[in-house]
Each structure stands twice: as structure tokens, then as C-alpha cells.
Length: 336
Image 1: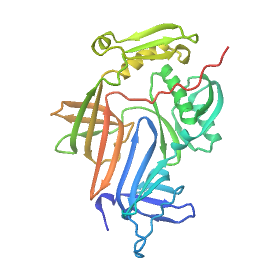
Image 2: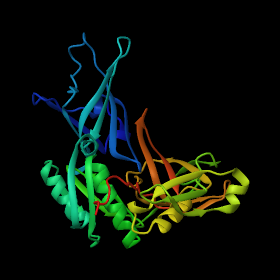
Image 3: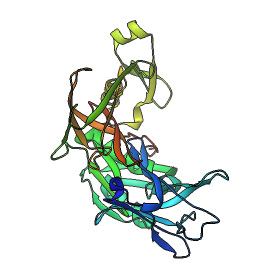
Image 4: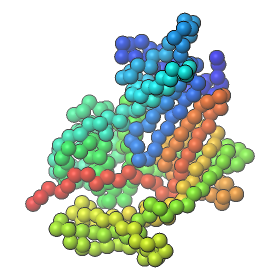
């Protein structure tokens, strides 16, 4: 059963016993997605199966098996099948595979960082846990921090968050095949332009103040309030919505407090649905020109979902005007 929308992507799965197959043509649907707050990209697919039809090939879908997602000769995702669902009344097996970012959150350790850069610690830490690394964004910022029973993802992102306070740049983790990369968030070369009548199918906007932070209180180690940053107009309109931070956790606590206010004001969620394009993934930029909602300009992709189903390939995006970094504040400064 030849499906044009799946002709240029393929899924090859391999069971733990070594049984392997290209199962693309067996899949009724494929969903590939990512989100800025979730280190792992996932690939969900639903190959058909039958216990009685001996002519139907069996798709290797055992848990713990590997899964590779390709576009031509480009490896888009190197993953492991970790979830599987079968329904006695159904004709498919629903499988979800996770890329190797999952293991950053499933492994924790104790470590002391003394005058080392985020990139140096990341390389060393990944080496200890057998995780391959590719390009790691250079910060040149020496850091000191203690981590007690903290997962690898939080350690890496905490160090890059602290480095971000010094460099003014934003960073994100991603996996390219089996290799971890940390990249500086920058405008995507040859940014895709979405517009109605061409490739944009729909645009939805939603405004919300429910998750707002309009005041940030700063406390010292003795729990004394030593400072605050506040959006007075937002407090007047919506009431006090305060977040508290520890001064010792940041090189510039007041600057960090202002950044919290900036990133947690009135939220406008923009959701786009367009013709499928594999360049539209979380962390990249996209240009939008939509006259009905008035949405126009350059945006950062904060979540993406690519779906191949019923002969159609579409992409759904959530976008933001700001480049969003998953800032973490794990660990603590050494006591003097």
C-alpha cells in the first residue's frame, strides 16, 4: 500500500533479538513531535497487525527495541520503543519511541563543579554515562556549583542557565541522531514563511493572564526579603501574583527577577496549522503573515507536531515572539 505522504520518510524498527524491518508501509499514522520544556522528542506510530493473517508482515515493536526515523539518507531521530498499546478490538499496535534525551532525565548523580564551564561539564558528564556528544555551545563562563542527587538534564541546563546570565544568550539541548548537542538559539537560516493560500491552513490566538507572574521577591539564605521586582500596572489590574527566588542562586538576582517578569506576563498563545515541513521544529524560527488575526512577523517555535495520516502530511506549531529557554536552578553554591 503505497502512501505518497510517507514516501520520503521511513521508520525502521529493531527488536532486542535483532529482528529488523522497514515498517513505514504498515503504519496507519505517524506522529513526530517536540516541546521546548521536554528534552525528549517522541515518535508515535501505529503499524497494523493480525494474529490470523499469515501474509501480513510482523512489525518489530518489542519494548526496548530501537527505532530510527529517516528522511532519505538523513537520520531525523534515533530512539528506543518504550511504550506499546494493543487493543483486543483494534487492528494496530500503538508504539511511542523516545530519543536519547529521556536518559538525561532518568539518570541522576552527585557532583561538584569548581570553576568549570557548562560545555566542559556537559562533555565530562555525558562521557561518564556513555552518552555521545556533538557540538556543545561554547560559553567561556567559569561556574561553581554543587549538585546532590540531580538528574543530568537539570545539571546541564542549570549550568547553561547560569552561563546565560553572563553571556546574554539562550541555549537548548537537542539530539542529532545518537549525539547530544547544546546549541545557541539563533534565527534559522532560510526561515520558512507561512501565509494563507500558500502553506498556512489556519491560525488561532489565545490570550491568558492565568499563569502570570507580576512580582518577584528576593530572599537571602536566612529567609529575609532583600529585594523585589514588580510590574505595578499588572498587579493593579490582575492582583498580586508573586514568585520568590533565592538571591544566592544567581549572580545577578535582580536581573534574573526582571527576566522572570518579562517571560511571565500576559501570555498570547499562537497555534499554526500548515502543510507539512520537516524544517519546522522546536527551537527554529518561522515567519508568519496572517491578515485575519493580524499575526505577522518572526516567531520562535516552542512546540511542533508532525502528522502523517490518511494520505496527508500536516504540521501544527505553537510559536512565541521570544526564544524560550528551559531555565533550571538545581543545585547550590558551596557553603563558605
